[in-house]
Image (cartoon, rainbow, N blue to C red; front, side, top):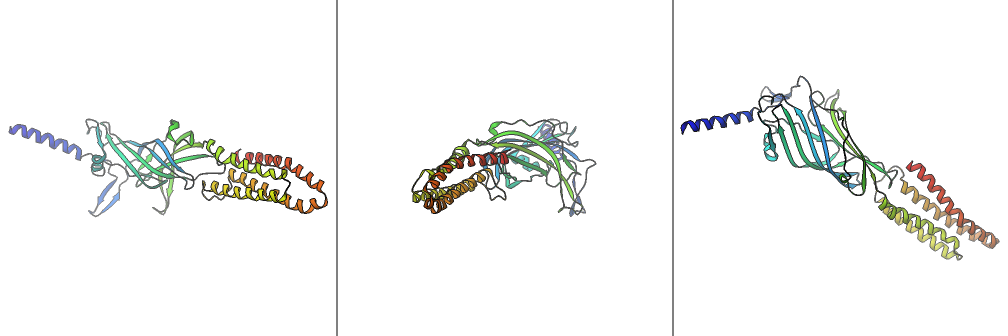
Length: 352
């Protein structure tokens, strides 16, 4: 019995010792018992990183934000584990949190263009006998990037995720280049959008607030390019806009000037309300969008209608009723043709 207890105690001690000695490359060591200093390794640690996107959702064009649900995986080799770990070891969630920073070194990763904190639903650390370490987490977070709405609602946007190592610059850690193309699934984004391409690349970014001479960090970028599906906006914006503008030309068939003015002013107010509804879909922009250019043409069309009706009635109708009637007849054809020409020019300027 005593011998069995001794053997069990020895085995328990040995297994505990293996766990305790899972130290990574000593990037940080204690100095004089009070301060910590960075000890650079002989060569930087090369990391393979990958972000798999499950869904891009909650796209808010006003705030230029979007939610991302996905997996983040980082893989690197640690020679400390080579020949010391005899089998694959997997640590998950709370156990992984207890091990990280004590017996397992995992760098703090930071998403650069994130808003708030990322929610980590599950995490996993895998250590293999050949020294390969894999960190895997399921996350969701709110991201932001600059968007270009000049072609709205025929626009194409890039949804970007940027990742860096928070404490480790390129002297100690860098991300390996991404050589293989990234596959994508149409279901990775909400139904309003369609993914056209996806790519990942590595670059460097220098920060001056950490060091007077600048500190350079390796950055992993993933870009998802998607175009807006225009069917909803075609029926909700473009078709009603064209109908409002077309109806404004009906004043040239109305004989009573009072009815002409009433119709034009009513359509002008309708267009103003339509413009307010459209502007609420976009942020305050320093440039014009395609839909705003069309609305501007609508304003001009109705305004010129009013000018022709007022001055034509006040001047031409008194002098020559035939001349006024001829003017109204010409306007029935000139206005649609002018609108068609202006719309074609705007399509060429904005969309091509």
